Image (tube, rainbow, N blue to C red; front, side, top):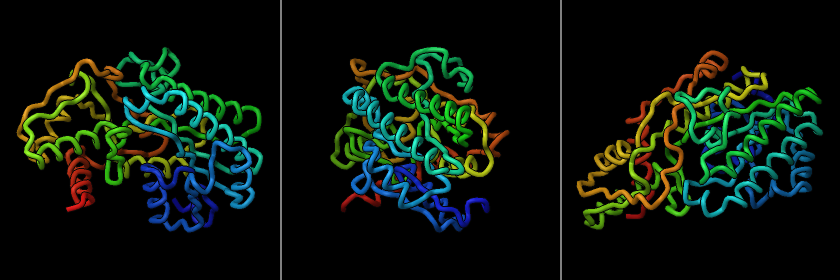
Length: 313
């Protein structure tokens, strides 16, 4: 990562879940010129605010990680705002990166951009073969539009913009608000609270059959640094674990770890989301030298321990 030392690095979304870990990884590599503004200090949806930020920072490398995100429920409730935020922030950051001569920009795409039904494991070539799963289609399409923008800017202006497609992330520092959280923090909180309250039943969404590819957030952060130093091509790159886990299996593992011995009730009136997810990470291995390091059981243990330590006594 020596190529990043001495660079002025802008991390949008640097106070978010993935962003905090990217900032930490950069600091661990000896990168000191990092700027990671919070949304209250710079609303990336406003073009003037983005121009002022770039004028002040003059970044040489940009990690664009800012987004309005959430689980199935949040996507179902706020598709318009998710779409607007993703597209507005991305358009403004990429255009400013072009105008201010940024050397390299690494964009966070999303696994939600893949078609609802995609052959496993998901290969990058399948990204445009169908419509995303309905509950998160707006967000997924917005991110695909930014991929197309990055590729168009490379073609027309020679901008070195690259896009990664992270799978479902988890780890310490995740969002545990049940209204907006993703599945792992939501399950950890539900099982923990039921166990502490002496309840013998936990209700979860769907029927337990969908599968996901879960990646520990520190591994994902490392992939972004690798992309910033090793990858310069227009094609997107999957960043995943290569492990497929069903919701039912996940629930069992988390319940065991928090000591919940009661009954799981699956609310089949609530959506399952995409039926199956598993990313092919061959391109990431070959082009980035990326390999997930954190075993799923170890990552779950660290995440649960972090959550338990943060909760008030």
